Amino acid sequence: MIVCVNDTTISSLKYSINKAEKVILQDSSNDYFDGTINIVNNNNSFLIKENKEKKAQRIFTISNFSNLLVEGKYEIEFSLKNEKSKYPIEVVWINKPKVLYNPEYAIKLISYIDDDEVVKDLLFRDEEKYYEGLFDYWNIKYPTNGTKFNFAMNEYYTRADYAIENFSSLNSIDGAETDRGRIYITYGKPSSVERNYSEKNEIMEIWHYEKISRDYIFKDTSGTGKFSLVR
Image 1: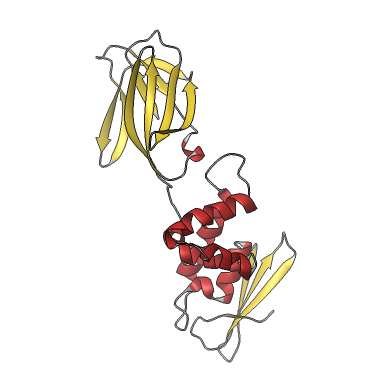
Image 2: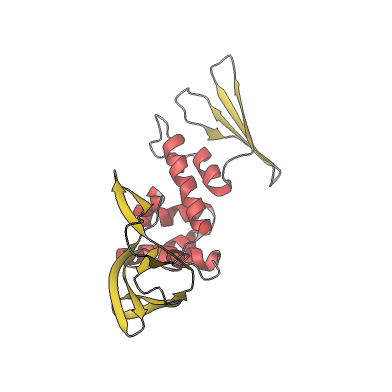
């Protein structure tokens, strides 16, 4: 985020981020440079250009705050000497895994890495609390050192998206629920994949995982793309 201030004598910009009249975060920025800029909308892409015709401003930069906030709408308040100004902002999860738009389904996928009782406990609440419970689960299991963005959660459900898109078959619409989908979601992309064909038109895939020193063998005996785990 960049904030332009006309007073070039100001060396620190105090700000707070609020939600429902409650202060969520308070900090200040001492990162600035003096210059003149214009922000131009070019086909929904915003460009920052120097404008030498304008009077120089003090331009503050504020970064690394969105990962401390959960998705949603907030209000940011700037304090300049004796003046305050407020602006609405929205924190958006860019490239958010599609699976997370269905919190109930995302919770059920946890069964690949945790006990069924854990899944039942997460589902034993009001539906509107599913998403909140999902975040709590991942932040407890994989702490994030203060950030709201959980890299482990993002990785897990990005894998789920990939499985849905790539491992569906004529007999199984949901690729995340196939054997290959389950292994991919649990362990990620294999180090290498071998594919062999037999005279009976059977297809065998061997997934090698070097880090865990393990191989998984899948076989499609029907030619429909449905691979079953055989070892």
